[in-house]
Length: 194
Image (cartoon, rainbow, N blue to C red):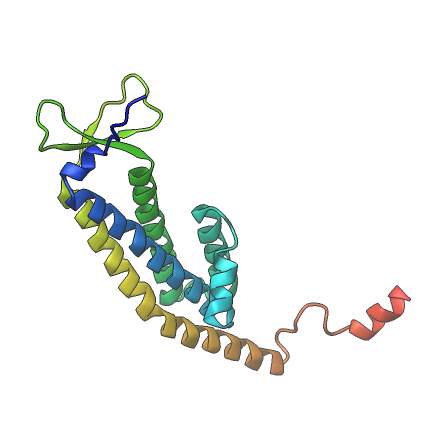
């Protein structure tokens, strides 16, 4: 057993671990805002939306919950609904990139130590290392920050859209066009259950 501690090849290129750390931290910010967005869609406090959003362990489960609630609560033809669905698609792409980056084997090219590479795990034959310029990660961070700003600025319109949607539903109920399922005949149901 050696007393020498091996260090990551990325330590020779400190911009990479820094960028990967920022990428991961910004995903955390995005997911916190998506929880607030879920709260806005549901009409509950932001922290309640975050609790619900973060309940599934996987990001796919979290985004599926958000997508399903948006489809159930907001008008499908509304511009805000279409923007939110696009946010979810873009979020999937950003998180998939982050996951690939975090679960890869990072190194440097033997023939040119100035080039940083990434290999998918498990290390199978035929899977070559891919050169990753720092600008690729920086571009992902930029796209992520743009998405964060867009999600954050959309939350007030979601709240307004939700109010408008439910106000129009309540007006149509008052005119007798739509009744909530099961409320009209509640007394007779109780009688049948006894």
